[in-house]
Length: 188
Image (cartoon, one colour):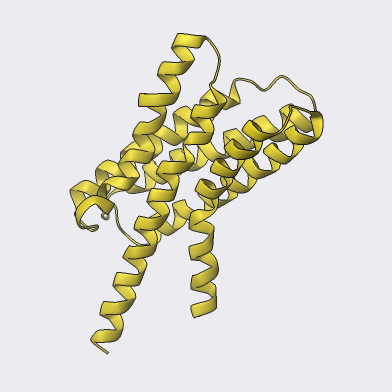
């Protein structure tokens, strides 16, 4: 059971690590078809990590027991799927799927905003960690969409920079899980 928990916990860090690795790779190497394939693969791995994080947020009941909790994680999951559709159909099948990129950010942001508010209202995560889901949800609205409106196109650095809030969320989830295990073992 402990090995399964370690693997799941590792998936919590996948979005943040993948997004930030993309930023480093994208900034370091010349643009090419091969580089875009690597970046897309990293992005897809990040989306898989998000699709692992969201059910874990639901199961851990950090957002309370309301129907809003279900709605938040479902909308955020739709965003992760939208991002994946953009990459798979747009890159590999060369279809025009550009709408799925901002739609993915919008849905992920709205879903994580709902979840973040629920986490704050549920008061399950003490201190700063309780704000991490909200930070993930606010990031697209405070960073990505304003840059989109200013420049007229998605800013890849801003999108990849979303890895920082996702890493913070992974830290929050990991410390919460460790705290719960500690108290569960203490009272056995």
